[in-house]
Length: 117
Length: 113
Image (cartoon, rainbow over all chains, first blue to last red; front, side):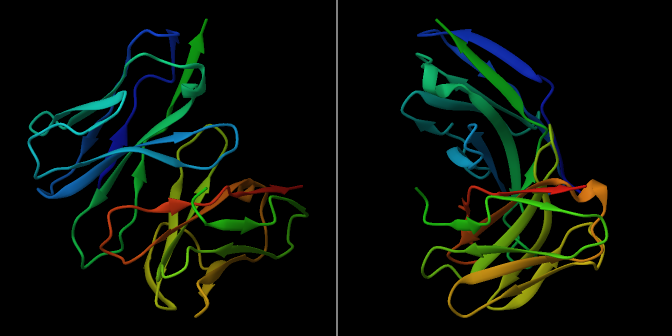
C-alpha cells in the first residue's frame, strides 16, 4: 500500500517570501501521479500542481513549483512571492497510474500554511 | 468553481440514524469518488463509482454504501451512524477513471451526536 507523509504540521512565511513544503511517499510502483492540493477554509480541495512520475522535468505553475526526487521518493512544493491568499491547508497526494485499479488519491496529513504581513 | 456540488453543506444526526449525502458531478464525468476527512487529517478514500458500478473501495465497513445515477449525480449512504463518523465528506469527479485530475466539491460536514 502506498503512504504519503507530510512532516510539517504548520509552516509560516512572510508575504512576498518563499516557502517550501515537504512531502515523502512510499510506493513499489514505477508509474504514478503526485499532486499538491490546497484546502482553504471554504473546504474545497483545489489542485495546485501535478507531477507525472515518468517526467524528469519538475512541474511549474506560475508561483508554484515542485522538486520531484523519484529515487528519494520526495516531492516538495515551493511557493514563491507568497501572498495572503496562499494561506490554507496543503495536502500532498499520490495516485497510481494503473488503470486496472480504482483511481483513488492517497493523501498526507497536511501542512497548514500561514502567511504574515 | 469546479462544477461539483454537494448537499447539504452541514448536517447533524443522532447516533444510530442513517444519512444520505449527495453529489452532483461535472457534466460528462462518469467517475465519482467519495472521501472522508476527519478533523485535522487528510481525506481517506471510501469508494469509487464508474458508470454506476462500484469500482473500488477503501477500508470502510459495509454500512457505507453508494449509488451513482445516469445524470452524473451520486449518493453516499451511511447506516447505523457512529460518533466517529463525524467528518467532512468530499466527493470528487473525473471524466474517466484513468484521468489524472479529480475535481472536488465543497464537502458536507456531518456531525453525529
